[in-house]
Image (cartoon, rainbow, N blue to C red):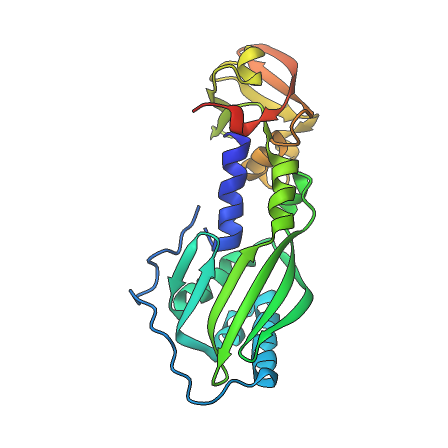
Length: 261
């Protein structure tokens, strides 16, 4: 799997329930509501109520308590992410379920946007991203409340996180891999990529990445792409098995954007 495309898919799932996720699972069209109808407020917005309802919702989201989080969510509430909008409480409930998988979150800050809107800065820690050198991904999450109900939740990846991913995970050696009979097998190699220059072959089995044996990887095959990617210019050593021969190959990662499909 190309490092750049894998990380993009994972980030997509994480931020738009596709991940990262995951994380790509897409919620577009998931809801039974085909159109988002603007909510008609019965009472004037009150920031104290907005803050209370939104904070309770966010705390429940962080705790992974879907039922509690959904208690004050409008049935036709809107979920807006970097990958587009979805409609209906079902989408929000599913987002919470997926977004909490292997994700430790905390509120880093809050900001009043208006009487009906509050913005949370959320720190997200995902073990797989940490393997790639990305400690915390931040999201800016704006919640709109009317009549004590959450009517819109906007989740956007922060500019700082986008920059961090560009820096930490854009380096690749230009291979795709698959799991075959419990082994990590190279399934494709891109022309003129480091793996191609190093004469790796389709069907080669990766036994270890930088000395970490596949059998010892906690998250199994899902962990592989995070170990293959890294900063542009950084080195990675693969332990390869080809038929009856085992050997190490050291390569320097290049910018994934320079590799042609």
